[in-house]
Picture 1 (cartoon, rainbow, N blue to C red):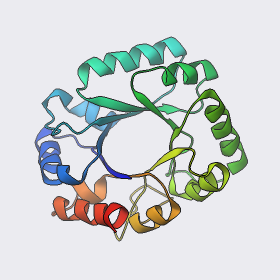
Picture 2 (picture 1 turned 90 degrees about the vertical axis):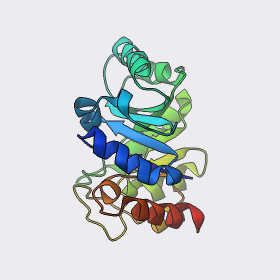
Picture 3 (picture 1 turned 135 degrees about the vertical axis):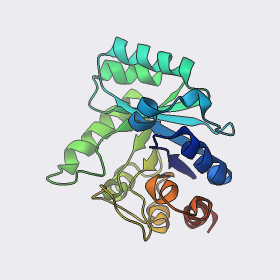
Length: 212
């Protein structure tokens, strides 16, 4: 179980301040489009915390493979990347041969209207049969994933909110509820980096999800 900090910031100074305040509670730092398009990630002071690259790769196999290798030369301590579950099976299989760990994205926590869960579960089954074990799982799917796949897969859940704003996440869950539902990792960004007390907020999520 771990706390992943989503670092969607445009200022390297603020990014390093937030990491400095929270590093003792973090297992991974997630960087995505916002950080990569605005920051020189080589200047991040990560305290040697592993990096999750969240770009949700979706392209032909050779393009995804080259992109992953390219980013690995620019991002120190890259350990995890996210990839769309809608990729072709060939691309899925390629990603599983990478020296980095793929987490497959089935659905976003900002879109829960008209969801056919049976199609999502079927795709998870297909990816598991290909060898996949790690999934980005929005709050509204945790229960279904656990009922269908028990503890054979690892789940990382965004949209984790306690008494903080939901922002654009339509599907949310508290840290304590996420623990009860048995997700493996929680991903928290804005409640931490938009707070005047990021250290205390990170500690709150850490303690509710991991320590208690």
